Image (cartoon, rainbow, N blue to C red; front, side, top):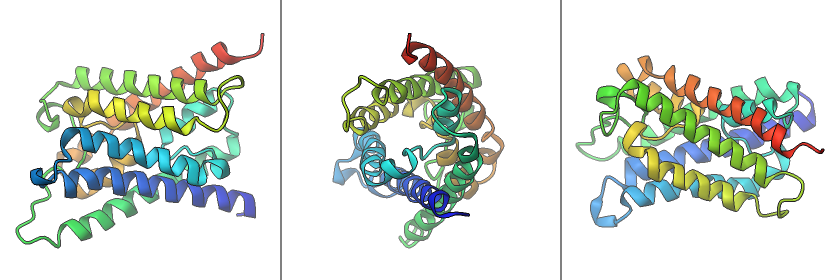
Length: 232
């Protein structure tokens, strides 16, 4: 792997690791203590802050995807080179699994700790609000569509330069505020994979939805975004 690709893959690894570890960690560790006051809003904000912070830390190196749906959505928009797609996605998934493993190691150090769903995503009985498969699919599809649409718009020519990380991070916060009760919010197949592998059982068997729906929404958003922002 040559220097530029190695730097890009490393950036995606660190970015996705931070998103999974800090985002899911806010739910597994901090939100487990109501006295801390983080709650539902805090978890939503934590996920937004992970993207915001890493967008500025390494976004200029790799583009700051940290999410297979973002990579494929930007690829469908003509914003991601073919040669970057597979290395980025592999790095994102590996980073998510590593982050979930570290989070498990820390969380399990508390006496009497029970992993529960371990911040994994699910539908039906595994949905926080017990929403059915169709509701969860539509929610993940729509939320990822608009996430990619916002990413494309805020990084297009004519948008305010240097500020894209702010609306993108806020968009992810808003997405969590809406969809945590439905699916526990994925919009990111890598983020879903790491926690699901440690939660085990049905969370793994339901993982397909949190790959299919976000990627479908992202790729359609990429096509729409490309059409809207292409030069006349």
